[in-house]
Length: 411
Image 1 (cartoon, helix red, strand yellow):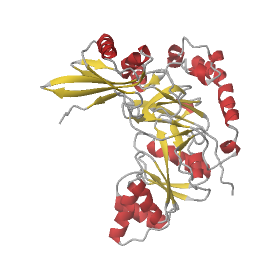
Image 2 (cartoon, helix red, strand yellow):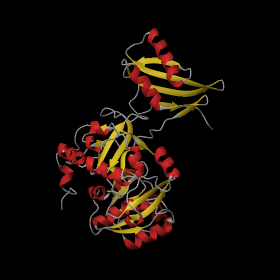
Image 3 (spheres, rainbow, N blue to C red):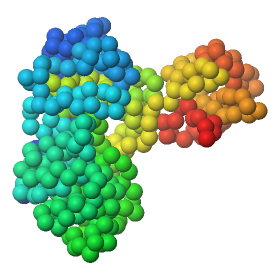
Image 4 (cartoon, rainbow, N blue to C red):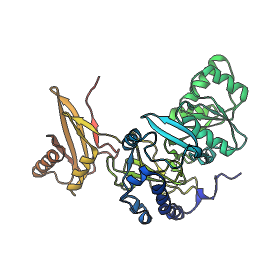
């Protein structure tokens, strides 16, 4: 049986890129015609011109705050959904709230490829411990597993003793759920004196799979992989046997942009992960996830040729209120663009003598007093607030995507 899901796993990278952008103009045209919210959001965009990553970067990023405001103004979907209820399978509410429809297609969240990579196969019984209540969480990989030909036990969360009993009776070969809950089930089984050794593979998401936890599962005979998924987009990226970052899923376009902006960063730079998917029910074009990640250069040693990311690296939304005024990462980016001598900026907010203190660290080759004064004036001009400027050597600030760091103690 092939290790690969299909021939696209190891197609030439340039062929994949060409195929994605070949269908972009017609897709955008259809979305603008069928979804009034998108028609308004993309009113200044000519679909015929969006045929490359460079052109796509000219499209504004849609962030959840804007989508939520549109849904509130024009419930339930704000005009960002295609079709009508006769063409939807389910409707969900995610935290926010954000309202999301599920289309009628098989594997609508594109998770079957990830599960196949983790060893899931036709005939497996899968214990699904993701929540099925209101949100799409439980349904995402449920649909994917069934698309592979697996049978799914919809366990959901909680009632651990009952879950132990179900595993003991059904003898599932696979688990999907959060990284730590499988350990909860297995530990409870040990306490109950129940032997659970049928599970040999697992796909986890919704939290960090720490190396020590992966090692424990391996010691129990469970080969465990993780995927990065969101309620809106489904499975965005997933681990392979190489364990070299996460492979970006097929049929989506992933970009990394500087937090608070629409602008892509260089490969390797940490920024906000932005995704375009081609769903004809719930199209999302340059949708800002709010999560931090970075692209990895080169190709995975597993033989798959897709783009790779480093996985989830934190949250990108670093907007901060200082002295009663909001300071946004986009403002710090304005400063960065003003000075070609600066390679990275970081704004730190702290408290001293019951007042907010704003300190801008400037990584630059120009360590002169005159440049420090120039940066101080620019900081005040852009943020309308006074702050301390510290010049640090070029290349000395960490590449972790942090633009604004709030160190104030709110306890």
